[in-house]
Length: 180
View (cartoon, rainbow, N blue to C red):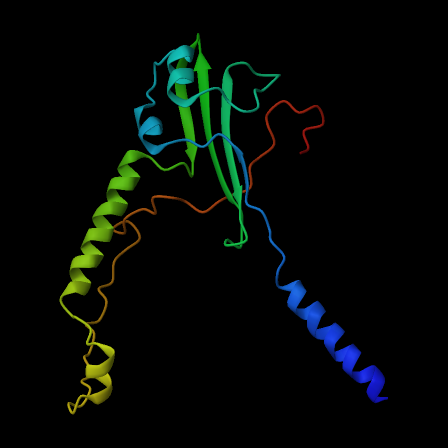
């Protein structure tokens, strides 16, 4: 019995340790669009201007030449759900008629994030945290501060989320069966 116990325990421990060493690669597909470029996209631009600004779409639509879809997909073991972004540009007479942005950040979104970050940093600078030794060996009693009650704001007053949550990408228009 003892002869089998030690090899079995070692084998189980080795399998358990080896299972934690699995590496999952990051998967990145599609067109990665820079916020500065997306902010410059305007109605009335020509196809060549859009191609110069954003590049060519990864997968052109074979059934509709007047629609360009820029898809971006990123999956990593650091995130629970994959990151999905889509920018769709619609053309009429070789000029941009409209475009739909689903999750691709723009320059304004990045500026708002920068402002929010600076505001949060200045709010936390006021209450400096004591070091480990002064907290451990200090003779002062810890003080409990009461936080002010949060102000209630309506949904209209809240700042919009600059990057909406990822949504499943719908099937391209014009599929023969209409099903993805």
